[in-house]
Amino acid sequence: MLKVIISGYGRMGHMVEQQLAHYPDMELVAASEDIVATDPSVARDCVCIDFTTPDAFRANYRAIARLFKAAVVGTTGWNDIAEDVFAAFRAEGKTLIWASNFSIGVNALFAAVSRVCDVLKDKGYTPAISETHHIHKLDAPSGTAKSLGTLVERHLGAKPEITAYREGEVPGIHTVTLESAVDRLTLTHEAFSREGLAAGAVIAARMTRDVSGVHEFSELILG
Image (cartoon, rainbow, N blue to C red; front, side, top):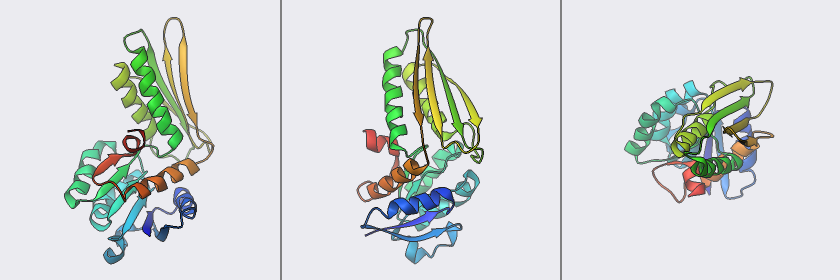
């Protein structure tokens, strides 16, 4: 039985709980708004799935690395301390699977953008990225948009401008545009809800049975 404790019991935490119910070999032990207060004797046998806020994760990542046998982190907005986070998990000998976006569809977008940019490199294309999310999202641009920007720069050799919009309750729309003097190519992923993020995070938690160390989710599912 794979035991899970959810860090952050807001909308995403509830969706993770719903996804866990689909797996009879997984058990939700607890959902906590104060993950550092978890009993160490309980935490050591559990995977922590973290969907909190950038500030909360920054405050808690060392404790998560120390307390839990593994962690799946869907919280974004901590790119600037990524090396410190990775070092903390490596120092504790714990598994970390992280993602700017756990949606399988978004990770397929990552693969598509990488391939398209390989084809268009040095052929006169200018890239741009736009993202739209709900007004409650704290980081802008989104972690997903930043990941797309990194992929575009790596595979196309040009740094894209990223534009972020916050509107209503939009779950998430990401668009990569590649334009030349003669045409425009657009790749878009639109989430209908946040369930895809929760489903991917639970898949990642299951992966912790078979992998060790620090991994980006896209590397594991795309190879």
